[in-house]
Amino acid sequence: MISKNTICLWYDGTALEAAKFYAETFPDSAVGAVLRAPGDYPSGKQGDVLTVEFTLMGIPCLGLNGGPAFRHSEAFSFQVATDDQAETDRLWNAIVGNGGQESACGWCKDKWGLSWQITPRALTAAITDPDPAASKRAFEAMMEMTKIDIAAIEAARRG
Image (cartoon, rainbow, N blue to C red; front, side, top):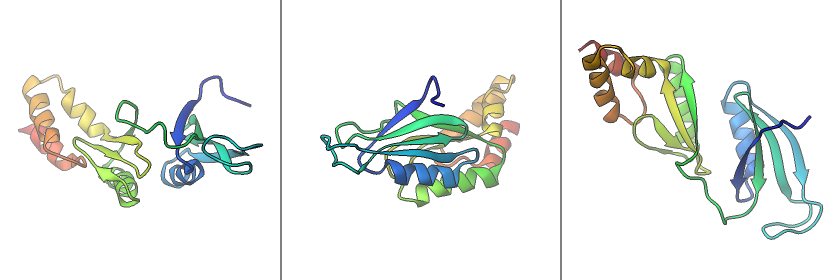
């Protein structure tokens, strides 16, 4: 059954590789149907993988091998709420260690250019603390980080 709303992500011939990586890395993720092109198209030939249906953390997605014309940008990202430092480290290291790149404040990109926010729940709690001074300290600590260090965030929150 086709979902009423599906996120379509554009790839340059690597949609199946990306979908398999996501399915292996993130919980509640799986690769579904693979459609091979019934004929030649601008960025591929008959029989090439055209689309890949996959679920990413429960979200229906479609990987489209549309060619190099459109690239991922930070204007779209997946935000992943993590429960502890081990989960934060595992996901961050999987993305960055598989050809991705670090960015600031818990952001990173996978090797396909898709942006991810690996966001510990402890960070969200700290920067929304009702005490403005605690919130500001946690926020300022986050601004100095690449991967989020939960212990450092909690220490900053406490002052």
